[in-house]
Image (cartoon, rainbow, N blue to C red):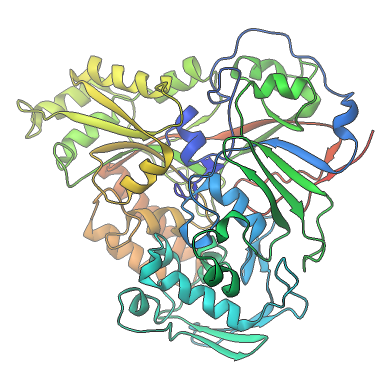
Length: 556
């Protein structure tokens, strides 16, 4: 999600869900911040880190304190599109299935399921010990209600068609052709069936997305305006406190059906200040490595080296070009822009090697990733030639690149790209910042001419990146990109039962749209974390999952 986003995602994420640095923190990656309030990849002042192996009071008790991002939307699963919000929602709510710390699908509310021989009907058996946070029982009726609520057009879920559209009747309800979702049937309190329009190798993975999570009908309909302030879910944690721009505090659900969390609470501090300094002062359990300290810490030459964790994100940052808007309706203009981003230089000089340079769209940790897929190399000479051959060679329109941000500072990365285009192509690109919520809202209109964005995995399958974002009929395709050959490959992959063959089809589709340059991949993000020694079992998950139930604090 960029949009689970991201969600910088969130990983925020998401997502999201933006390019990198401050942008990535909002849309794609779920964390960030440094001494001046910018992303942890921004250069920090030169200083000498000190060891925090003796963390005194912070390791007493079971309260985990971590830096957090302000949610970009309310705590309603059907509205979540960014990683910043999803980090909380996956802890508060749950669905039929979930993704564990090994990135495998496992039962959540469902203890088992059977699939019909034609691959189109799933019969789910619910656990007999699942409760909402207020200790009321969860039944199959709650699952059906939640899916139908997601598909109700009056609720305007931005994600239901993309993730649940293969369920028979979802699109009919969303377009007011039916009053119910015909493909979801309650057999009894613990059993329901879901029938698909077409068989899908990744349907269970799609069901792990928040839009299918179960909400309590009595709460939602009893307080339609305010229920998201302290929502009643089924997840491992409950909302105990939320002060905008200050703190989100989640307390453990003692009766969680997959086992009560080991932590009593997780406190997400949303305020500003230096994350690295607060980490070294034993005010928080999780910190981020400042870029200027990365080499020393990675090389074992810092007192903090033993507390370092590098977690590659299953995410990609990129520049998105609207193929329906001038001048990016001309592929030669798009290719020229792609050839004039010096990603290696930006990563080494501005980011101190903090990220991986993205040479394709699928991140390396994604199943189905193929190193053979490549985007355009930095080649300003060839780019200038292509631009001269384009239909806009002598009448280039004004170009604006939009991005989401929470501060007034333009990320150095985007400024570097802006200067590169001016130097190589003689094109002045204007930068437009919107607050994160407005960015996500406007992005869905498909009107951005050019934007800095990012996408973080919702589930570990290439369809989540390729089919969701580049299918000509996908509701998440904001570029206006449509290629009949790509659509044919994605259509074939969607119903292919052999996972190996499906991955090969995605590889072919990915290379075609890399050549078309509607998307310019820039970086694959990496979380460079510092984790207090008393924090144990911190999952090294490369995407957003309900992770805090695994974590414990061992007292000194």
